[in-house]
Length: 84
Image (cartoon, rainbow, N blue to C red; front, side):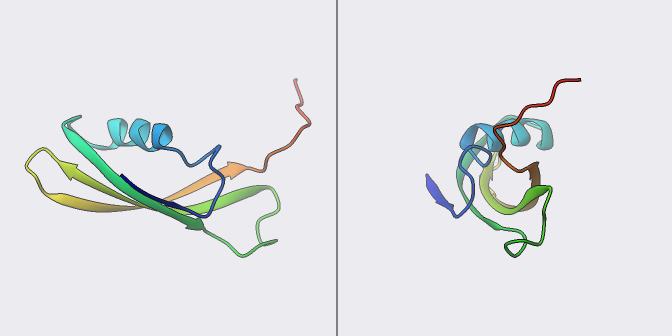
């Protein structure tokens, strides 16, 4: 599987992508071929979170290969947890 990542591996993972594919695709008859991830903004542009672009290559049930283009937004990592 091709995995090219320039971003946080604790967020952009195979598990996250498969979970999204299970929700996004009409059938679970697919093969994840690989993905590429890149920062979605310049450093310092997004103070509250991180933004990533993802290109996900997947082979669907009929053998057709599709490239899906996604954006992922998440909070920045922090050692401080606030409970309400």
